[in-house]
Image 1 (cartoon, helix red, strand yellow):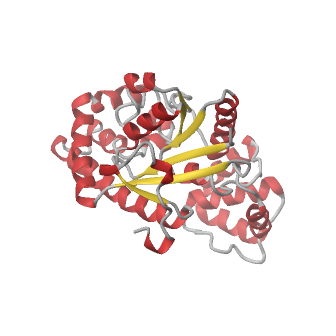
Image 2 (tube, helix red, strand yellow; image 1 turned 90 degrees about the horizontal axis):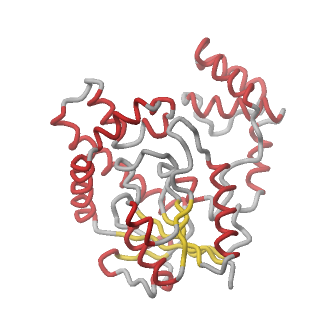
Length: 313
């Protein structure tokens, strides 16, 4: 069997879950999640995680891996995804990756993380200095370590500055050298044929689906889910605590957001996310097929013609 990975992506609420299930059932495939929020146990309603019934239809991988206080990064994701892909193909099954989370998705087509291993003590030391002294001294040290300049690094962004400083300290190299090494890396999945298609809907239709999805989440108990996650340490994981649906609900629970504003705010933020996703898919992924959700054909999903990049939107 060809070593092929099929990837189905698309904006939030476009309808990827059901189409992925149908395609997997029709082609003897197993699903590998590419959604950075589905890793966490107990984060179900707010992430639109597949239900137990949906999970029972097709074997799924990389869902419910971690407790809410644990962190998953793209490097660990790649290692787990490669292992899952090799296992599935090794058993003679097809692979369907589905989701739309930024670098996790891009990892199937290009390098997304350098190979610098940052020791925990280095990371903790940089974070402690940031909290004690602020951002400016870290930027100053970074400039000393990079006399040729910092390139396009956003020196007003604490996360980007701390990560850059950590990597320089851990490797003893400049950002320019690290960037050159990174650019020369192959894709983590270069040994596979990767076929990509994107599920799309008209903006008005997608807006309506987002409104219905948020209403369904609240009806299903989103507020109670977030209360439970807070008790289990949700705030120790900024990636989840800051995700759309969770951060607004935390605001409600903590008395910073009136109940009447919860649903409209989640809808507003989700629609803004979809606009960003559209741009990201267009600019960060290779040219690929755009498949209208209303007429998606499971049999020929990955046979749809690839759209020239200039015509993708």
